[in-house]
Amino acid sequence: MRQIRMLLSWCLALFLLAILTHFLALPWIGEASGNGLLRDAVGENVFFSDLADKTGLSDVEPMGRYAFAGFGVFAGISLLIPPFRKAGAWLSILFFGAMAALMISPFAPTTNTGDQAASASQSEALLYLALASITACFLLLAVHPAKHVK
Image 1 (spheres, one colour):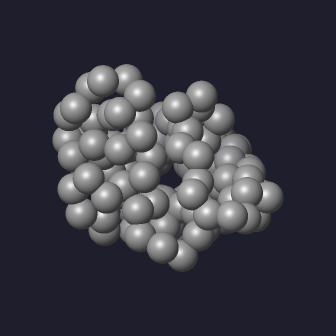
Image 2: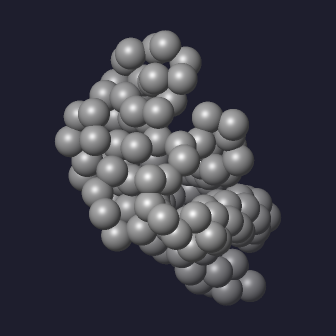
């Protein structure tokens, strides 16, 4: 039974790591730059630039985005190491919760493309992906075996 739980734990951890990689390295909406956390240049990220403009906090775009991405990288590394996997699951819950909040935030940027319906459906898909990832994190917390005490 312990081996099955460990196998399920690895499957969930790898799934969560793939989703974390998607949110960190790939564009969130569309194929253009300006939507990724780690690969955009300073001032190029659409969401954090809009957030900085609307709130008046100028450090949100370069430093806030890098801190948020660093938190996601730390959560992903914690998921890979079995003794820290439960802590990584909690960190991932916080990360994906923040991502879901970003997707439904009133500060969310409006797109400049003419296809508003496609952009809205992509945002909804990312919101559902973040919510599914939170569910997978809770499953990981339930499935990951406790320390083996002899």
